[in-house]
Image (tube, rainbow, N blue to C red; front, side):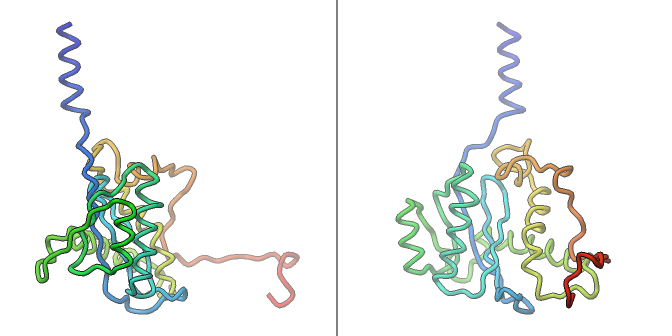
Length: 210
């Protein structure tokens, strides 16, 4: 009985998880240095407090309808379907009517950041972390890498960033593993983004005007 009690105490100390808060912070970056070939100019950055994950969605503009679609993707596809349902959404000092209506539908409270006190929105710090990570990746691309393809780099850049961050509710997992499960490097090798490649296309497979 004493050994069992001791084990329970050790288990509580080393394997206990933090309570789920349901906190979600979002904000948008400024306009990127050039538009992507898909028409994207900005990025919506979401910071999920429980998983400690930084999630990024490229967006063409800051219109209410555009921001709503990007938020729906984060809320539904990336968090709710994986068991981390947002309960309180903290955003900048303004909110559109369409986003307010959606939050009412999904039963999520929201809180606006007071004007001039942006540090209260944790997404601001997440944006800084994301920019540092993304700029470092862009600096490592080939000198001839077409910059208008920047939004194609986001999925792998987001993956590698969250592999480096620990989950808050389960410190034994990375932020990526908390949301998507363990990443299999053997199944999906990660090569350097923006690398220059030499491709040989056989003559019998080449198109007439290829």
